[in-house]
Length: 186
Image (tube, rainbow, N blue to C red; front, side, top):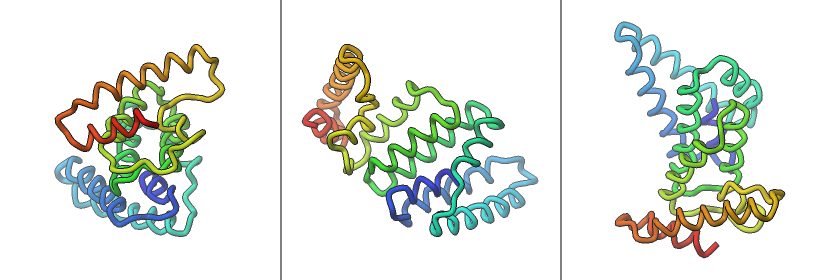
């Protein structure tokens, strides 16, 4: 449900995003107890179809879903859910700031700390082709900086971001190198 919610967060649910979720469901079923794989696969297929229908209709109750996760899921499961959301976000090659805000909100609602979340997000941001809506106030979502922070804290955070992206300018991976150059110019 979280994956479908995120897939629809930018206003369109792309087939490639839904495919990431479907593959995740298949993996979850295949790694379950051997004699329950078929049962779990069938159950996850029903959930997938329900989530897809609700996402297309705009009817996913994200507060309920995150509350259930926050109260009942293990820490590892919560990070796995957030990773799925990030993989859905990058599936179409575009990191839309609406998706980034939703991922941040989901992380907060399920009780995950921002440090690990940022490390996970930075890895995915380096892999997308485009970051849409990353200007002005929206840029703070990409950089993980709150515009209301005191000047000294903001300066420290911006210096840290600069060092991180500056180090990636010399990456062997052309996509990472291009993303780093884009981040440094913004």
